[in-house]
Length: 554
Ligand SMILES: Nc1ncnc2c1ncn2[C@@H]1O[C@H](COP(=O)(O)OP(=O)(O)OP(=O)(O)O)[C@@H](O)[C@H]1O
Image (cartoon, rainbow, N blue to C red; front, side):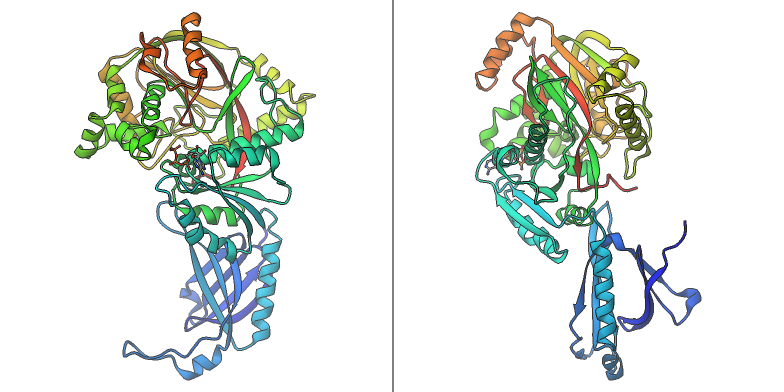
């Protein structure tokens, strides 16, 4: 590839060393020029420059007896300067900001460099200039507002991003405002400050708004949904921040803010969940029936306890979080779970009979038992995404796409007694289960990994759960099957019994144990929310939303 031609080149003082500095269209480089053979060369892509400012002339350094004072001629030689703030990679996928100041005698030269760098930054059209920010003040440890104001807002200000900040007053405020009232045209993105629940709220609002504007009926399971144009940023400030972790590689507000500033884009698949011609919810990470649904139901009964309930009952909005204490080496944590109702759910080991039919994704790269992982610039997502977009071009209308895919792959049907049925649309990795529930799942390949855990002994199920916290293949067990699918449907065994249960669920009553006296039915958990119906129809929508993220960097 031809190297970008130098835009500017000059000598500057960096700290006390004379450096040769070159600005190209795509990079800023500087190196000490005394010994060119051994010179240390620093290079920053222009796309990772956060801001550039003219620097105040340095105040003379006072010698406090620790080393030599700065020579007066050096001070004289650097009356002007400019500071470039840029992204630096830290450990464990964390991004930091780093400043470098360039000094030179000529103020005009500094001014010219600042203007040129700013012009290059303005040419980066993927960068957001105006953001709508929703803060959940009650998420996690109730530090969302503090995290935003202290750690994120100063970075946005430095990057010249203007914001409209709303601290929510009630649940679903963000969802409802986005879906109906707010004028969204003036924004380049929406930022959710909170946990996975808050993010889900924002996404539900955006998807509903986009479909409404496009005249698409969300309640029709056969409709092809229109992708949301506005990107979504996540500033992690909840008790569970699994989506942030799975798309950035860490739960760090500064890292997430920097991904927003540089204008990263990561498409994300979303599942729609329907019942009887009505949309129930969208799922971003995990849909679970059986074990996970039961654990969540336990947790919901303890909602009054606040975040404490997570460690108490072992419920985490990503089920993968739940698994960790089981496999955790810390005896205290194991004890914690051992006495918790979450563990009681595990011990009760219910089986749920039903029929699952699914449409396997046969025409794609990748399978759930691959050793490859979805990472930044993932070739599997790119390849499968290209296939899906070609399909769309070949077909006359969007509605033809699913029909075409369905002609090529046949529906499969499995009837059985299940301990758990899970659909992981992303790996569901989290700090305590770094590989996640489905380690090889992709963020944007248009599929979800359907994991069926059949009847097995309690010990075998424990072995399966433990494998989520280590390197062993959790699917390499005779009672576990896994399929990469585009759609699936679930029907519980006895429709009369399940209608009775759904009546109770729809009455908005908490699930009482009596509802499940015979334990014939569980309930679905959709990214941490309990669904009101047991018979569901699920469909993956490829890249329905775009995040300010780039996937986990290798
Ligand atoms: N002002 C508010 N008051 C009450 N609830 C709110 C408010 N703003 C948002 N919420 C709701 O709070 C729920 C939890 O928020 P969030 O995901 O930020 O935190 P969390 O501690 O990770 O939550 P969860 O309990 O779901 O694990 C979300 O479902 C969101 O809809």
